Length: 81
Image (cartoon, rainbow, N blue to C red; front, top):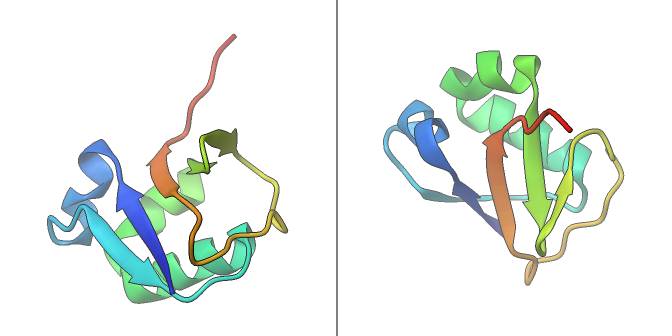
């Protein structure tokens, strides 16, 4: 299981939970599990989110590995220059 910290308003979409656990080995599995386990997150996931894994931000790196010891933070999509 991977512990995911939900940043800002994303926690509200998961019933106020700031930290949740999901089974995932990569970014694609993580987003699929979140969509399945927390349907209220679905609209935000479809718009796009950014995921910080061990301090590095990923947007579309679907097969980026995640381990049980990874620090994972889900954020609203970061854009801009």
